[in-house]
Image 1 (cartoon, rainbow, N blue to C red):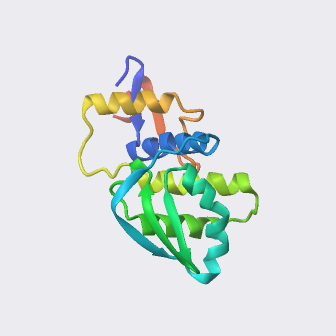
Image 2: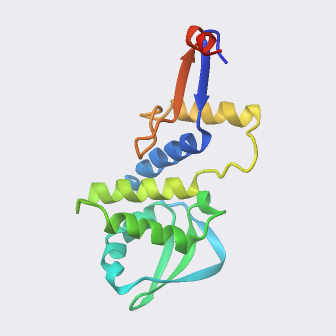
Image 3: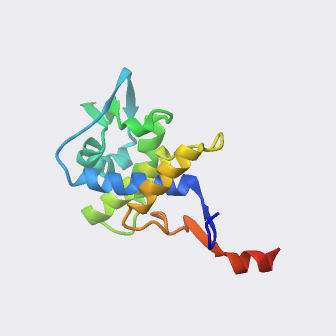
Length: 171
C-alpha cells in the first residue's frame, strides 16, 4: 500500500527481470564468476543440438558456467552461475539450447538475449514461502534500478498500480 493506492508485484517475474539484466551485463564483460561444483557433472548433448550449443558456449562461460569439452558430444560441467544453486545444470543447459535452437533468428545478440532470458527464468526464486519485509524492499529497489521494471524479458507484466479511487470502487 502507498498513500495513493496499492502496488502489486509478481516477485518471481521481478527477480527474473533483475537476473536477466544482470546476465546481459555479464555478457558484455570479460570477468567470469562461477560457483565450482564439488562433483562435476557430465553433460551429453544431442548431435543435432551440438552446433547450437557451440554457438553459445562462450556466452555460457561469461555467465558463470565452466564447461569442459571431453570429446564428441560429451562435456563436463565444472562450475555454474551462483544463482543456479537450486537447479539442475543439465536441465538448464537443455532449456537454453532448446530456446536458441527454436529461435527465429541467427544473430549473436539475439542468442545472448535468449540465453540470458532462459537462464534468468531458471534461476529466479521459487516461491516456497512469503518474502520478509527486507526481502521485498531489496527486490523492489533492485527492480526499480532495472532499465525496464514494468515487464519481464518475455513481455509479461511484473507490477501494476491500482490507485486509491479505483481500489475503493472495486470494493
